[in-house]
Length: 79
Image (cartoon, one colour):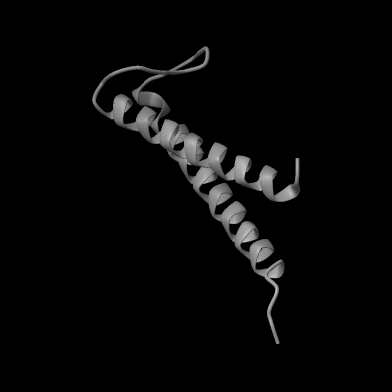
C-alpha cells in the first residue's frame, strides 16, 4: 500500500475514533454507560474521555496536515 493510501486510512481511523469518543461522552453525560471493546465507561471517566477526544482530534489534525503537504508536493506544474 502506498504511503498516501496508508495516510488516508489513518485519517479515517482518527475520524472514527473522534466520533466514537464523542458518542461515549454524550452517553456518559446523560447517565448511561458506554462500551468501547471490553471497557465500560461511566460518569467518573469523563476526564479520561475528554483527554481521548483531545488526543484523537490532535492526531487527526496532524495527519490531515501531513496529507495536504504530501499532496501538494506531487502536483506537477506545466511551465
